Image (cartoon, rainbow, N blue to C red; front, top):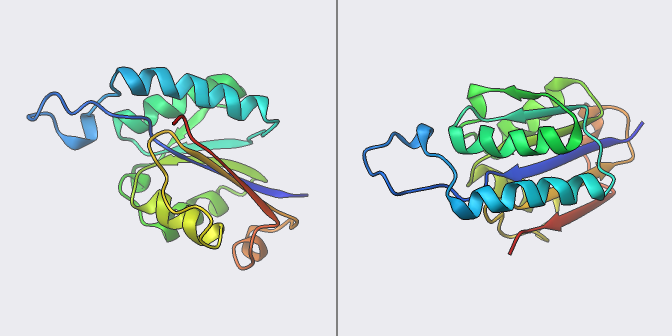
Length: 157
């Protein structure tokens, strides 16, 4: 078995309503364009997911829904992923207990984790960026303790 992780930063959100709670901000027009495109690109890359975990924030769960649709996987909402640090994002993926997980969440946690796992190769996760990591391991405990065998990065811009 191979362990796979895809990190997806939510697509571009709408800042038009200053009275709206941060958790309830929707995607803007660009985000609504980018999310299905990036989801299709990940699906076309051959990446297969056993689970998709998403922050409960509207912009993240909307982004995640496009990935779920493209990959035929139901999205699982986790409140703890909203504003989560890198360590929690990785732990949530590992705790899911399946070989291939997509996590849809927020910065700065996403960039921090992508930078750590890519050994500095990824320095920023712009909105709707997708970073994938693969370990030649069959156990998340081992995988999270060693460097990935390979990684990729894709961004809508």
